[in-house]
Image (cartoon, rainbow, N blue to C red):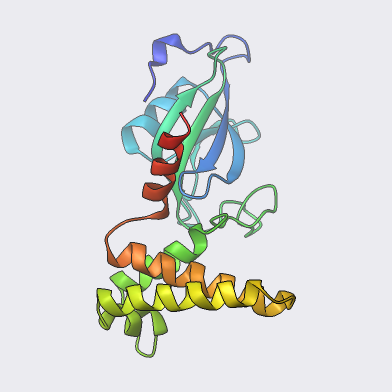
Length: 199
């Protein structure tokens, strides 16, 4: 976490601007302000507490709505006068009911959304789910499906039908991610290998 003694509360009259980011999606959720007491309470309770400039008091985000911001990590900027909080939000962050105070959707980017669906199916199987049927069929069947989808993508690549090509590309990506999950790996594990190759 952070060393409170290094923070500069003087610059902004006893308040520190705090950027709040979802630890999973990396989406910026809101901006708030903390005085030293709010920061101490946040670090102690692991739920973000701010100083309300309009009400002139401390307030814990979610104290009335139940939409808490659970602390994962806290980073200090180079000037020691701004904090970045990484959190796991419970429900929407904005008082309007929006996911963020900037009216953005808070969702996983890239292929993370698909990985989350597959992980959810593994943790909580759903009757009639193709993902669960595939996982239940065993690793050999999952691997076979990846091979079949790869061949179908190659065949479509030789033609000029955009929709069919993209459909097969999506099928391959889906089955590939199911195979990763069935083997106990994530896209992050593969990305780490790719990054290591380019150092």
